[in-house]
Image (cartoon, rainbow, N blue to C red):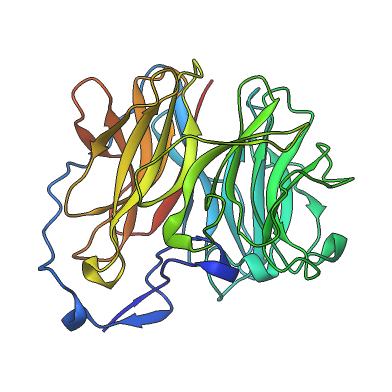
Length: 338
């Protein structure tokens, strides 16, 4: 038996925080033989004055870390609380993150509160308390490019599904921007002009998590524009620095190792062509472009050890290197420049 916190769906969102701690997974039920991960670990600087945030259980519970100037630095320290989902502001001055009671799920949306701190880990402040605004679950907050708004997903019990909300930078005055009550809107991020939000949601007439595609939503009108048409589940879109591409994860094989095989795809926002850029026998999640657009940072689940680690893919030759030591769980990488 291997203990793992596994993909969270439906009312638990798509946490995808596989963390070697909770639900027993019997490998005898796997449909394919695990393959050893040969991706090299690169214990060197990311270069180009780049660093990245990530969540790790290296110190015991889940905390926020950063890698900068060839050093892994712990930013949050609290044995009673897990800290997760770090998102740096476009200017690089502040970090959004969530806190929940330690010892539960790594991405515990039922018991989450939204916090902010400086990039050095100082001035930690709660923005949205657990159960604020009547929400029974919240998560996946992201900054607008002008830093005047935050977009997030939350569940109002009067609606019963995950909906998208905007708040000001202090987490006040939530405004719902999604319109369909019968589906879960997940993984919201802003477009570069802050007039639209990209997200993962089922198309009109479908409601299942397996039907999720990437959509673009007009904040003012609520109009929804479908961007992907691949008949598989797409999640966690991230926008390239020039605004011309989206990268996201795709569930290619739901039965793989009882977890599902996830690849990383890229969408050209001009031609709307979809390209698979990473598909192998490991499980690849949470892709994000770096500030140059030359690399994609992502979380890689080793199907032999069932540990997550941070990796980086070179867009020019599609080669990957691991960026975090593999003796710990590390996930939710968020690259930045300094």
